[in-house]
Length: 222
Ligand code: CTP
Image 1 (cartoon, rainbow, N blue to C red):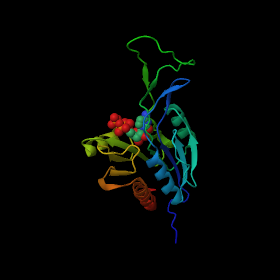
Image 2: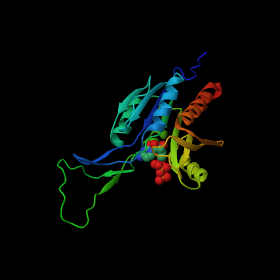
Image 3: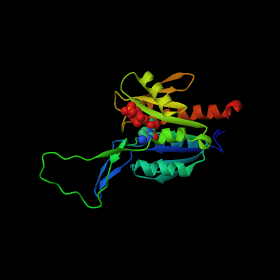
Image 4: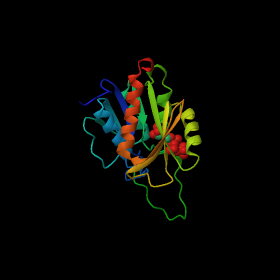
């Protein structure tokens, strides 16, 4: 028998990189493949959830049964997430650019014969932190991701508090993670830290889906 424990639950998830324009042909971005976020969207949909995937540019197909909203910049991503609420769960997997160019030139910037050039940057909104502090519109469960190279547990626990989210799934990125197919992870909740051995991104996604389903199956916590 197929069990679909998340039937009736609405889940919004961000994935992929953001792309911050400099001029009509150039942008700032990062190497996020979107694979982990897409894998989570797929396992959540398989578990019966109504999944809205707000995605930066990736080379990936829309997971089956998932509604994808395509965005480019961090500000567009935040707007799309807010428009997709209310939801029971929000999961921030996207590698959001922390900064964007202060001004976007409407004309292609011309190379000038100077030894140095500078682009002024301003801070992007923190999507995870914003959604975690929404008050009455806050999803019941807010999950963030953390990429750490050292002191993974302490850094990720501090990040959970700083961002105001309920859980953090921390990746040890001292090996190959960005664009790779496997992750070692640590799930940090208010009560505990759970070590998950290195596993393909599909398995990490299934574990996270199972944990979410378990939370929602506990009557007192829903
Ligand atoms: N995040 C977000 N909006 C941002 C920046 C990050 O929603 N503007 C989310 C990411 O989707 C992820 C978590 O916040 O869930 C990662 O937090 P971040 O502070 O960017 O941590 P790292 O990427 O681990 O980097 P650092 O430790 O350098 O802060």
